[in-house]
Length: 221
Image (cartoon, rainbow, N blue to C red; front, side):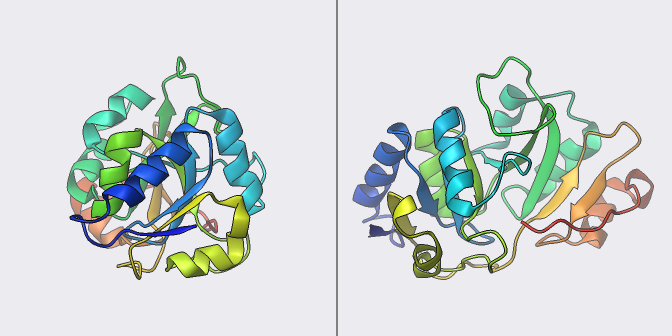
């Protein structure tokens, strides 16, 4: 079911429905600053598996985790390099996803992560309001694998249908393109693994060109 989520003064019932769905281990679609996302409670493995199934994706492509505040990072990650922290401080909330080493004690199963987690703080008021209530959500782009990422709730519904319990509709996605992904798990430096909403030039301006490794071929979200 689609719930309106454009007016902070009126979106309370819509967020309530989304929170209830997340707590029940169901899958939701939420707006972000980049594209719409399909997600679930990051700490309910069955719910995360349902996200991957709805998208038509296997465990080898685990979803990123959206968080409500940069202060959440140290509860989920360890050994975060200073250049990665500098990017988080500069571009969060925003269209930058950072892959870091996950805290090994966390009771979650996002897929075949090899001990890493991709974190992002979205720059969208409805998403942040939701995340402050739910905590970290495992979220990937709201589309079937191989299809265009949804930039409206109705786009997402047409692809994902009844696999999603709650669709939050906040209108068109502001940016309309996926986030840039930076891998910060290599001791030699950071690597951009997918181009997106934050340019390489903007990243290099913050951490210096020398801190960036040679880019790999971009992965599709």
